[in-house]
Image 1 (cartoon, rainbow, N blue to C red):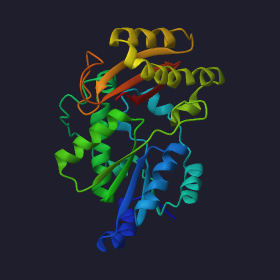
Image 2 (image 1 turned 90 degrees about the horizontal axis):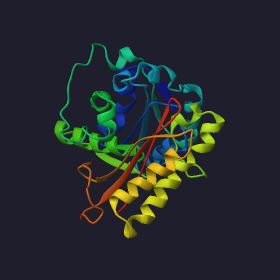
Image 3 (image 1 turned 90 degrees about the vertical axis):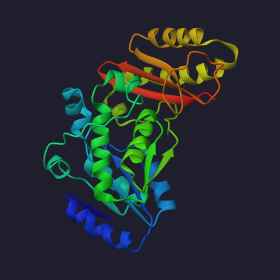
Length: 280
């Protein structure tokens, strides 16, 4: 496995497999890797001829400078995990390598970024569009692997690929959970022991809410989720929405046809946790 920091180096390493029309799998990450990330790499290893992973904490997708500053950075440990998972190339650039000049592009994702995360984190998904497009231009992957925990981000990336006509297959991968149900996230390491003990209530509440769908209405379902999360003094509900799986727009009845997703964001102190589950 090779670890490189420049665009020239990563392109040189991938030039041969790309010229031979081999399948190049790519997992863009911000590091602080956990089993969820490694699941992406292992799947890519099974499905692709070459596997590349980027580790880059992208400043343009953080609308909170404090959140950017405290985001965990564990490059040495990440490299060890990636080597064990069968990764071929790790691209770990500095900011100046990704953005040699300020990226002033503004994307129009329609209504996809006007709800949930996009509504509460202004500019976040534009930053995602900037970094993902930049990485795709550099790596030129055949397939790119993304976790379904960031469900809205996955929809944004698909729209980005459509708009920019990238010839890359977006491969969604299931959420990986801790033994107690908590969705794996790099941010979990920032929780205090007390917050970490409380956090599994998020997934537990979601699982129960999904089970309730056939026997209740949307208003009752939302009240249940609010009562459960707000009943714990260490957690604060930011939102709970049931949305159309494709458009991400809120549904107003659980009887609506079409696939639906239950999406939630919760604050545990200064740490923000998200999760989602398919309803139908």
